Length: 394
Ligand SMILES: Cc1cc2nc3c(=O)[nH]c(=O)nc-3n(C[C@H](O)[C@H](O)[C@H](O)COP(=O)(O)OP(=O)(O)OC[C@H]3O[C@@H](n4cnc5c(N)ncnc54)[C@H](O)[C@@H]3O)c2cc1C
Image (tube, rainbow, N blue to C red):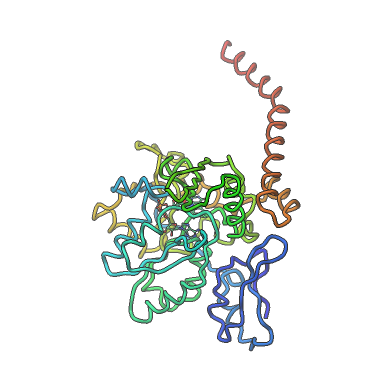
């Protein structure tokens, strides 16, 4: 049996879940420490279920969104502690109020992240805000299966490749699922985060008790990665691109290989609703409100439309209709997957099992390169400025 290639496997675990012999397990590869499925051929009965369910081998066709909204939660506390407008939280709240179960990404031991199902209001706090690391789906399929089997309804908010896996597995039960995917530029393996945390602990002689990738204290729109110690004190906080982890994530340097070939990073969506940070707000139509902490909602199906309308009608969210092409123009992830930059290619050559060292090296080189390019382009810039001044004087 041949599973998805390293270029396309998302690590979603659907193959392992569906396998009747339970003979598929995940192992880290030797090149980049990325987890891929491995079949125990001695147990395999060649039933083909793993191939059929795989969202990489048999990708889903997406649909063009029906509407786009600029949106945010009416609750200012929820909005300030969420990655952007707090829409995910309002979707969860409405689901729980109506007796639905909710699925989201939460930290578990050692800052691993996994998707889990809950019926508890306390879970919303755990699910809220971005975790910029691979989230495991190893247990959540069974939890969803149990809910659906007993007639329950479930709202899932997750990455597009994860939503694809859920759609493939539960294709007969879509009526009882509301699927919400996030605009996504890629995800890094957990091994890198583990190495980064251990490096920071050694450097600061502190134990990391809490980690946040978009710390609300600095405003989540400013992307502060903060580390807190056992006493609850923040001992490290760095905004976008200032440290190795931030650089590797936001500069698309150390993602899983499949992220650079993602089938779902485009304007055809496979969920009922897509959420993102609203990039490009005002590009296609005037915008009279603040652009900060605004989410983008793409409504992709009639079911998604009804849900968002109900949230707006019951005054949980503000949702301003926007031209559909605006967020697509504003966010490259709604057009194509992340591209392999100079830094990524260098990192691929440099990675030797030590995430922090290889990333720090690439970080330094890319900074020198940027400075050098700036100096090289200086004469051109000065020349243009002179032309502009002469033009104004005329
Ligand atoms: C890895 C990643 C990359 C992203 N890239 C982009 C991008 O390029 N452009 C863009 O516009 N938006 C991107 N987003 C989405 C954005 O950060 C916000 O999640 C989105 O705007 C919704 O914000 P919110 O305030 O409504 O909800 P939030 O409170 O931020 O919650 C959003 C949901 O994200 C889920 N979540 C968080 N981390 C993970 C994870 N590791 N795996 C699976 N689910 C997770 C939570 O379960 C929660 O349901 C990305 C998010 C993630 C997690």
